[in-house]
Length: 607
Image (cartoon, rainbow, N blue to C red; front, side, top):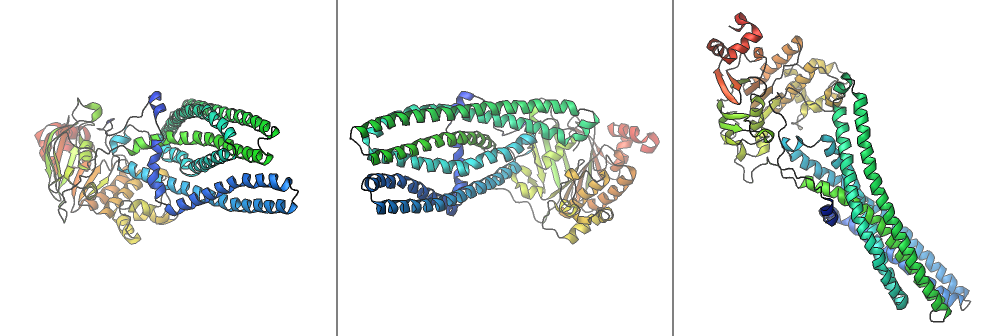
C-alpha cells in the first residue's frame, strides 16, 4: 500500500518477562498447556503408560531373582535352581525387550503428534493476529517460535516426560524395595536424598532461565537474518554484505554465548548429581558390607539392596538430565504461551450483525477519525465522511501521508476508528463478522503478494474451491492467459519466492486475476499501475477496466491519468477531504487537484 502508514504500534501484545528472579520462581505450569494436546491421543498415551509401567516393573523384579539365586542357588549348590533363575532372567529380559521399544514408539509418536498439533495451533493464532502485532514482531522471531520453540517442546512432550515418568517409577519402586530389603540401610539413603535433590532444584531453575535467554537470542539472530535475506537485492545493491554478515556473526556469537552458559549450568547440574549420588551409594555400601561381615545380613540381601540402590541412583541421575531438558522446554513454552495469550485487538463480535444478502456494495464513512498508536498526537484521519454508492468508482488522491491507505485499513478492519463509523452495505464493520466482511472485498495492492506455489494456486488464493477452468477464465479477463501459457509448465509453473521471476506487469495481472476470481462486490485498488512501463500499464489498465465493471471500486492513485474516468475523486490532505468532484470539476476549481494535474500533465493537458 501507499506510504501513509508508518510504524503503527501493536495492540494486545504481551511483553516478555525480563525479570530473572521472577522467572526463577516460575513452575512447570507453562507445560500444562500441552495437556489437552496429549490427552487428545488417548490410545497412544495408554500404550505409552502400559509399556512404561511394564518395563519399569520388569526391571524392578531383577534384583529379587538375583537375591534368591545367590542365597539359595549358590549356597545350596543347586544347579537346577540356578538354571531356573537364569531362565527367569531371560524371560524378564524378553519382557523388557518388548516393552521398551513399545514405550519408545508410543512416546515419540506422541511427541511428534503433539508438536505437529502445536505448530498448527500456533500458526492459527498467528493468522488471527492483526497488523498491530506484526508491526513490532520480526518475522524471524515469529518463525523461531513456530519452529525452534515447538521443537524444543517436542522432547518434553515425548521422550523427556516419558523418561521422567519411567525414572520416577523406578526411583519410587527401588526406594520401596530398598526399605523392604533393609530398613537400616534405607534410612541412610533417605537421609542422603535431600542432599542430592536440593542442589538439583536450584540448578534446574538456573538452567531454565538460561534456556529462555538462549531461545531469545536465537530468535533475535533469526529475525535479523530473515529481514536482510528478504531484502537481499537492496543489501547487495548497497554492497552491504560484509556489514550485514559481521553483524549477524556477532548476533550468532551472542546466541552461542547464551547456549554455552546454559550448557555449563547443565554440565554442573549433572556433575553435582553424579558425585552426590556416588558418594551416597558408596557410604551405604560400606555400611552394608560391615553388616554382612557381622552376620546381620545375607549376601543375597546386600546384593538385592545394592541393585535397588543402583536403580535408584541411576533413576535420580537420569531425572537430573531430564529436569535440565524439561527446564529448557519450559523456557520455550513460556515464549509460546505469551504469544498464544495475545488477544487480537480486531476480532469478530460474539453476536455479529449479518450483512445483507445479496451484497449491495455500498461504503460509508461517517465523521471518522483515527490515529496510529505510534503517533497519537497526529490524526491519520480527521472527521472524514463520504459515501461510495453501489457500482461507483471513487478515487483517492493526495500526497503521501494524507490518509488514503488508512481508509483502506479501516475498511478492511485492520484497525478500528477512534471516532465515527465505517459501514459496508449499511452495517458497522465493528458489528459484522470479520470473514463475512472481508469476503465482500477484493484487494489489488501496489506490492503484490505472490507465493512459491504454482501460478494456478496463486490465482486461486482466497478462492481455493475454484476449478482450473475458472482460474483460466479469470486469467484471460486479467490479460494474463497469454504469458502464463508461455511459461514452462503453464498454469502449473511454480513461482519462486514472492514471484520475483515474473515482471511487475505480470505479477499485477495475476493479482487482478485473483481479484476477478474472488468476484467480490467491493474492489480496492492501491496504486495498481504505479511501477509499470507503458506497455505493461496498458495491459493492466485494460484488465482493471474489466474488473471494475459492475463493482464498487475505490482507487488510491498518485498518477492522475489512472483516475480521470472515476465517477468521483476525493482529494486528501492532512487526514481530511479537502476537495471532491470529477476530474473536470476539480481542474476548473483551481484548487489542490488542479495544481497536481498541472504538475503531471501541464496546464493545457490538464484542462
